[in-house]
Length: 389
Image (tube, rainbow, N blue to C red; front, side, top):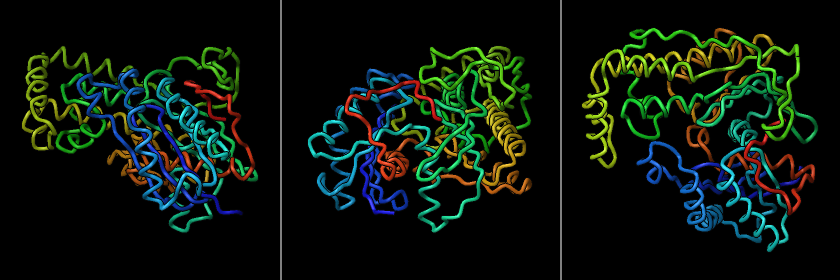
C-alpha cells in the first residue's frame, strides 16, 4: 500500500486539534488546544464559546502540527476533517478551514466520522507497536462525554463497516460524570476529578440500583438524521445503557442527607484556587462525599463493563476495543483488563492522550478512505447527528 501523510483536523466539541499521521500507522505530530479554562466557569461546554475558540485556535494549531511533523501544506498527501457527530458550529469551523486548504492546495479532502476516529485511535497505536494481526470480529465500546455506543467492527477490503448493537438511551457515561461532579461542587471537567477522588472513598458505601431499561428501543438508527429515526421491530439483541437514573439517585442522596450547604462551601473554596490539586479536593471533601463519589464511579464502571462483556460473549468476538474520553478512567481500565482476562477476550485501549478528542485519530481513520479514493465533495457539510455505519 502507498505511503501517505495525512493532515487531520478535529473540532467537534471543545478541543481544537491537528495532527499528521503516516499511512494510519505512525503518529508524526499531534497538537491539541484545550478550551477547559473557557468553559470551566459554566460547568460545561457552551457551544457559542466553543465555536469562537475554534476560530482563534485552528490556524496556529494546524501550523504547529505541520511544523512538528517537518511537513508543509504542500508536502502532505491529503486533508482529513471531522464531519460529525458533534456541535454544528464547532464542526463547521474545522470543515470550512479544511475545505479552504484542500481547494487552495488541490489536495484530496476526506470526511471522517468522529466515532470511527475513536476506534482507529486504538488501531493506530497497535500498529505503531507492530501489532498488525488483530483478531476479528472486533467489538468497540466508544464511551465519552457525548457518546456511549457499542459497535461490531469488520474490515472489508480497504474500508471498515460498523453495526451498532448498543447505545445510551439518555445521557452518555461521560456526561453523567460531569453532571454529578458539578452537582457536588467539584468543578469541570468532572470525569478526571471523580477518577482521582474515587480511590479515597468506599465504593460500597452507597447502593445505587441498576439502570432499569423496561422497554425495547425501537428506533431505527440506520438513518443519517436522528429526527428521521423510524419505529421498527428487530430481533437483533441490543445492549443499551442508561445513566439519567443514577444522576437522579445522586441528587436524591444529596437532598436526603442535606449536603447542599457543604457543597456550596466546597464550590466557593475550589473556585478561589486557579488549578486545584488532589490535596485541595480532598481538603474540601468530607467522608460522605468521597464515599458517594466512589460508589457512583463503581456503579458506572460495573454497568459499562458488565454490558460490554455480555455483548462480547453474545457476539463471540475475538477482540475488544475500549476508547473515548472515559476510557482514560483508571478504574474502568483496570476492571476491563481483569474481567476481560477472565473471559479470555483481549482488551485494547488507546493511550490517554489519544483517548480524548484529538486529530491523530481522524487522520488514521481517513487512510482507508484515501486508499479507496473515497474523497469528500466540496459541498459536504457538518452533520451534528452523523451515524456510524
